[in-house]
Amino acid sequence: MGRRSFGSVRLRPDGRWDADYLFAGKRVARRDFVSEAQAEAWLESERVKCAAKKRRARSSTWGTVLASPSGYRVRHPRPGGGPPVNRPERFESKRDADAFLANLRVQFDKGTLRVDSSDETVLEFATAWLTTAMVRGSTHDKYAQYIARYIAPVPVDDAPADRRVRRSSPYLAVSLAHTPLRKLSAEQVGRWFATIRADVPTTAAGAYRLLATMCKDAVRLGKLDSSPCVLRGAHKESVPVSRTIPVPHIAMLADAMPAKLRLTVLLAGWCGLRREEVLGLQIDDVDLSDPEHPRLTVRRSWVRGHGALGAGPTKNGEHRVIEVPAPVGEALREHVAVHAGSPWLFPGGRGAVDPRVLDRQWRRATEALGLPAYRFHELRHTALTNFGKTGATVAEIKTFGGHASIAAAARYWHDTGERSRELADRLGAMA
Image (tube, rainbow, N blue to C red):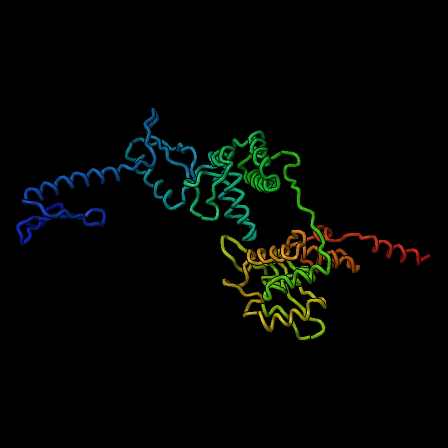
């Protein structure tokens, strides 16, 4: 009775025997042996099994050491999946090769293992490119989805742990994930794009633009001699034409929204704010010191980036001050007094209201009124178009709408005929 080199046995008061041992941090026990010899025999059989398990654990199946006429070389799994990597290093002894492979395994487990650029796959380059891309959080999420679902999808079991990109994809058959970047050809890109475009033409154009951008950067970094993205017109997409919403409908839609969200429709429909800018407003952004002319300062956007909601910069990265039109002033004062919650003008469960909640309430309002399926962004288009009708210049529209360029603002200027007649009359008056 007592301890052994492996496990221990114990005599119970009733004359029976128990045995147990510790393996991998867990205690394993077997009870009610008739004799000490039976308990010892069981322990010995368990010792043999545990020794075999330890040998299997030590002889990892990760990677392979291969013998060659010039010495030993190493092959190991590719980070992110795909064909295995054949290392160029050569070793005189198997012991040195084993040590090198063990070091690679440590880097692999830590996620720091990198392969030579000449053997770099599209997925590896895209993943590295995305980590350094200077884009907004919401744009980063969109790019991650394009890569994971369209450009370089992999089976879910092989996908990264990031839940935002662990989505099944119907395009695994044309995936560019495991294609070596240097071997990516225009023909392969053409086949890939044709398959994607047949199902999702608009999204396919966005994915193609992203792939073309990454290939352009690869050329700049010397990883490609030239870009394989040479399809003419593949980057163009059919964007839905924005409609202007009749002014009476703006008030009707605002009244159909929940009381705490009524102001969102007015701010977008009269002040030209983007959805994310509306939700990003805080109480300190509202200036009611002049009862006749309230003002708003647009400083931030409330967006979903890197999988989480949070406050970020405006789309052009600049602040702008907006003089609030008369139809919005009284509603703004009432909202601040009744519905605002420090610090947010539109408080929600995790800061401000989730954009998806606003979209859902907006759809319900349009359906309840029997109106066309307007998009919330068309409120902004309406405001900027109406602002242009007042005689504002394109430069003034640019400032009012917070655009980054004159070209972007020009899209919101429409010649309605009345403006042309007015200008013609002014020109004729000079005679």
